[in-house]
Image (cartoon, rainbow, N blue to C red; front, side):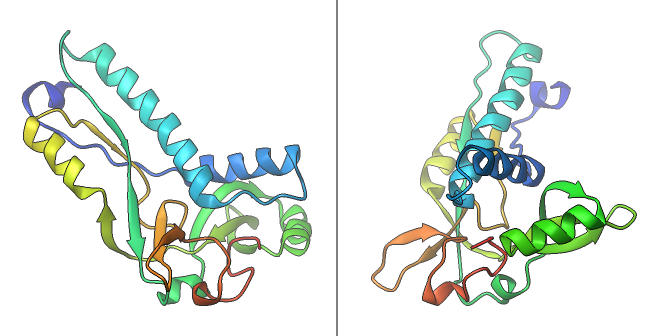
Length: 185
């Protein structure tokens, strides 16, 4: 907050643990339905952005403007990251739990924390920030403080479809790699 008193700042943050926990929560509610990471990502972006904005607004002088934005990026559907998931999300499981969960959900897992396993999803490089014009307008107006979001995993990434539309980068499709490529599908 001290920095924000004298400078225009943009805060960008991650949300891997929260996305993973939201995916588990959704699976507990409806086990037969796998929620797309882009939707869970937007939900957690908003939640974290809200918390950051609340704390900033409490710490900054009265009348200070602050905005929270959900950031979407476009990625190349041919990005090799879709075939090699590296972005950890969710909790760390014991080795035994992780092996069972890997088999049950067909998730890609990586070893972490003294032999524990954690789910990993693709982390493709962004090729464009969607909605950059409103972001620039807010920066130029001096009101942008919290730019929410993950810049590199498909929860907030969009791929152009063959007919020009967009969809979440973790959703199954012929141009996004094989089913189950890190997305649990």
